[in-house]
Length: 232
Image 1 (cartoon, helix red, strand yellow):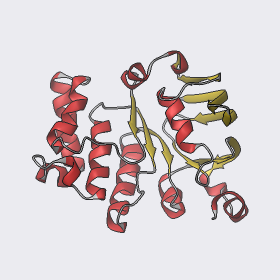
Image 2 (cartoon, one colour):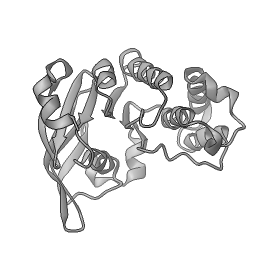
Image 3 (cartoon, one colour):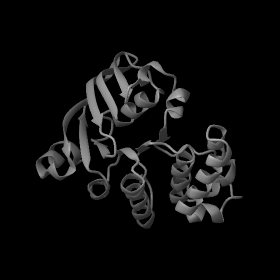
Image 4 (tube, one colour):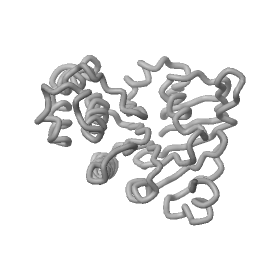
């Protein structure tokens, strides 16, 4: 479904992604892994068009994404939940969610809105509360819900459990599993919590210094790879 080939990216003169190749099959939940600073978030921003490519191409099925601006990529069915959530803190929960209705309009958008509230009941209870007044876990649910308003077929999640209390981590993991396995949504996930990654993902890529150094079925992520590339 998603394919990156020969991707190079720079911050100024710093070469951050090196000839990166990555495949996310349709229907999979693929986890992008690695220590801090190895290029995981940079990869996601390149996919979304938030950072430019120096070389290479990114395709979603038959569409050359790397030729499209960021807003056009979202309209191709990609939902994106950035690291740090990036909700609008002074807007209400309802207003944050309704931003997605500018793209997904009419009856389909209203049904998507109700499904989000069914998925995250705490948001229904807090519709009039400002986003910035929610707890970290509630803000993360709002960020995921905002992406789901667009009814994506491909969902990108950048460290959705960062700084979240354990009971909400469990809920977010359950939601990822439900979206992927019951609703057949393809997921690309950056996640540092190894037990959660093993629970929700069926495939993995490991990055090191901007390069993909290992990939495969999640069951093949062995202790040697964990010690070499993931432990701190």
